[in-house]
Length: 97
Image (cartoon, helix red, strand yellow):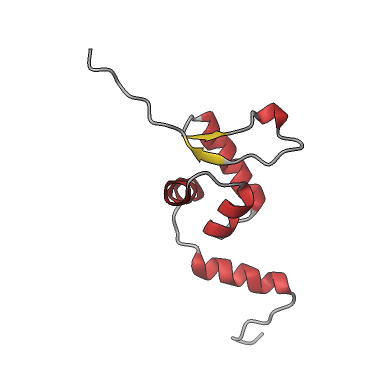
């Protein structure tokens, strides 16, 4: 085996690029940062923006949505035929009373 990395397919090149670009920040934090910077976005845009696969982004978005950190414009049960846009949920304000 040589020290040079041999590419077997185009996917190998994409994987290498993602490893170089992706910081060691947890995916959920990257998603929150992306949405804070770019506003409401669909999974494909978030995935490309943070250099992470769509399935992983979907998984983490579901967790963030359950925690009420992220919201979607389409209810979870109605997403089969539509592309939802995700955005940061408005912060809950604590009343001073």
